[in-house]
Image (tube, rainbow, N blue to C red; front, side):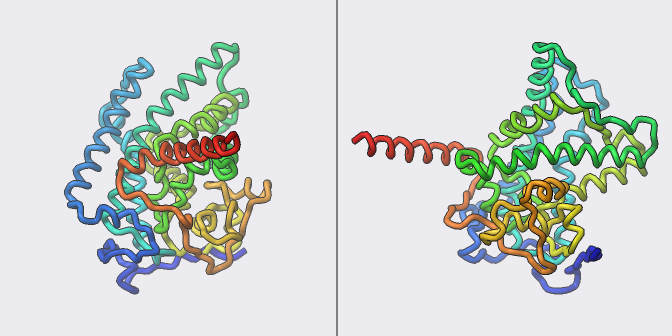
Length: 359
């Protein structure tokens, strides 16, 4: 098996340093910052701060209010749990700039715009997750069964290695549901009109992960989280409950399972059979026809291998990304109405076709 090679860009060329590019992007990049690069950076920073405050409000007050269950956790722990996705995203954004990029990098304007979209997505995810849990409990009560018909929790009291094995099983089960949800997003024109917003990014980076319209959280809840909650009990070990060493190891390992959008030139060779590396997932975002509808899984390539959608990248294969013929959005508001706008276009086209046939 080929060894994993992490190509570091430290000390090489200027575009591989930690600084954001400041020059105007080439016309063919469709950079989201092109439309808003004249807006003061201070405005974007204040807006991001406000959105982070919204996430905190949602986690501490809104989500518990929806369920009617007060949040009895210590304030510090509750804040840490609420802000963990944001902190992880910022950390991954820093890490990817320590390595040679696989493609163009975002300007600071574009990065802040994507950060706004990600943070608002995290806020909406909290609401969707709360409503999904309530819906699953209501369905189980209505039809007289316990949630999680298949119990995959086997690590309690069996040591840290058993916990890691249970975490891997949980990741595999979650990725199975994600695989089919993700594949459906690509194969259904109505859902692709929504999902293509995620794929239009020509500067694929860690911050691309939640580059989604807010409707995504409810689609994922309906087609992925809800059925998984109904059918499986999985190990839900939280890093902050395991102590410093075990919690840190688990955090690192689970983070490595979700680094697919990193803009890094990491060559993994045959290890792509076992890990959805950034190179693997970059193939999924590629513009090239041979890469279309490949590598749907995000954690483990197992499901792509089993269901015939696996594409093994060549050693130095790092294609350009994006969707040809699509106009990039340039504001936070545009991103939030992207799906609705595309669906309205589809409806108007259907209505016009129907009118032309009847006429």
